[in-house]
Structures are given as structure tokens and as C-alpha cells.
Image (cartoon, rainbow, N blue to C red; front, side, top):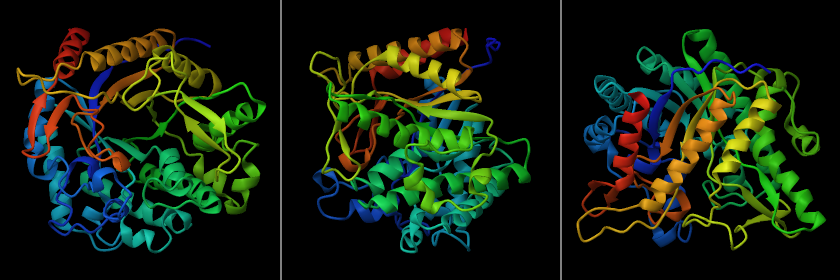
Length: 441
């Protein structure tokens, strides 16, 4: 296989709507499943919610200034579906679109290219009440939402990401139930997996027919599962994890099939023509990567296994996720070898460490700098070895609402004091700024 020429490269950062925007009841926005879930007792650590979050809805100009001084060339953010279509479909909410119009215009004025994610898990509650992603109707609902959004913003936004991490949404939201909408049912999980693929295909087809100049892609959370012990059962369950987490989204999109080992479980939800609709051409694949998963068989678990912490000698983040840049490099090389893979953007990569505000008023997060340095070098090695990688987005610009863990995990380049909303750039912010300057010199 020939090595493609090195392409121009974008350095960026990323966020998501429910994690940073706040303003959940303002200007016509309706509840999403994460509003409902976070207000349900015992679902989120310390009963925290995204009601205010980083107050980005009112502070986006300040946050764009942080990006401008950081020197990023691109910013990945998501649209709150229920902010622009409060009932999930039908009548549009003008104030919601006004916010995203301002955000896009202000990003472009700062010289920052927007990458817009259409679905980052915050499904309108009204659609969940009608079946959500367990219903085939979601294909039309999502496609219509995608068309309406791109019609309003597509004159200035060229790069569109259909879904964020559908494996996480399906698995944690519908198999383990630890994320919204909080369902733990095997049939619902497999229906949701297929309907995520179906909705994505319908949206890609609709947007491609509307504007051939748009760059269309999707973002998958890809990591490899390995057996946590030497047992045959855990080895088999690691293979199952790789099928469910990675291949059940990669293969329908890029190969037009589901993995043979899980096909019998997905097949009840597949109708004639579905796989053809799902296998749409994409201009890029977004890859989110954080860790390698250690899988242990657990017969009484709904899915047959559980993910456990890596063995004690291995370095890890404060989330107990393994730090292994070489695994990241090898994963990217495997993607290139196994699939006819389009150009790749690393749409999320980063680490949670317990940050401390020092007496000098700064955050000296040397461990995050070391993490980013190692993973960026691993990505660059994969690129030099022929993987067509076009950009890298740090997760995240800001400390934010990290789903079921609330505000405890701090992934940001910028610390947020959630009592005052004061933004404090960390040492990693200045390190990344200097890296971008060096790389772009």
C-alpha cells in the first residue's frame, strides 16, 4: 500500500453542547434526555446537572478569545437538538438558531474553522418519549434535523459530523444504563445500535444530495479490548467487546456488514435495504481515543462482561484509564490496514487528572502535558507511517460536565471555577499553544 502525501494539518480543541452551554430553560430550549437523567436522583455524582455548566451560552465570546490566544485553527462543538427543535421535529426555534449563527460567525471572525457535531447524546426528551433510538422512526427524525441545521448554518460551516461516539451512547445508555436515557435492556441495545447506523446513513444521504461541497463524516470512539486475565472466557468476551464497541459501527459504514459473531443479535432489526443505506461514502472519519479496555468475563452482566481497571504496574489517569501512546499509534495503523479508511481526524483525545489550583493562582498540570505530548507524538508517528490524519482536537477546551461523573473529572486545558465561572488557563494550555506555534512555523 502506497503512503499518501502529507496533507495540511489542523490543530483544534473540542466541546459538546450539554457539557458546556447551560441555559437549559432559556430562549425556547426544551429538555433533552440528559436534563431528565441528571435531575433523576442517584444518577449523577453529587446530584450535579448541566443546568449552568460552563455558561457558554452567555460566555461564548470569552471562550472564543481563549481559543484565539491558544492558536487553534479549528473548533469542534455540537448542536443542542432541543435548542433548535424543541419538540425534536417540526417547528424551528429561532432564538436557538440565532445562538449558533452568532457562534459560527464569531469563530470565523477569529479565524477558527467550525467542525459541527449534529448529535452528541442530548436527544430531545419528546423523541425519547416516542421511542428514541430504539424506534426506526429516529432515522427520519434525525435526517430532518440534520437537513434543517445544515440549511441554516451550511453557508458558513463546511465540516459536519453526524454522530459522536454511537458505541458509548448505545452501550452506556441502553445496556448498562449508567448514561441517559438509563435503559438496561439487551434488545433495546441492539435495536439502538442498528438505528444509530441507520439514522446516520439517512442523514449522510440527505446532506450529500443537498450540497456536494460539504465535508461529511462521523466520530467513533475506538479502542481495543484485551482480556484482563488469562481465562478463555475473558478472551472471548474481549472479542465480543471489540465487535460491539468498534466493529458494529466501523463495518456497516465502511464494509456494509455487521460482524458475523453479533449478526444474529442485530438481525431482527435489519430490513431490506438497510445495509445499503448505512454504507454511505464519508469524507473523513473522526476517531476519539482515550484508553485500551481491559475486559473480564461476568456471566451475570447483561452483556456478558465488565470493564475493569488495568493491571497495577501500568500508568493511568485519574479515571483509572491506561496511559499507552504506543497502543494509540498501533490502533491508527490497524485502521489503515483493515479498512478502506477515509482521511482521519482525531476528534477527541485527552486526560483527566486531579488538577489543583496552586498558591500562585495557576494550575501546574505536568501530567496532562506529558500525556498529550506522548499521544501527539504517537499520532505523528502513525502519520509518518502512512495514516492519513488531517487534524487533532484536544478534549477539552474547558473543564465541564462529564456526564454521570458530574464536574469531578477535569479534562480541560482551561480550569473553570464553577462558582464564579472564572476561566483559568492551565500550564497545558500554554504548552499546547507553543506546540501549535512550533508546528505551524
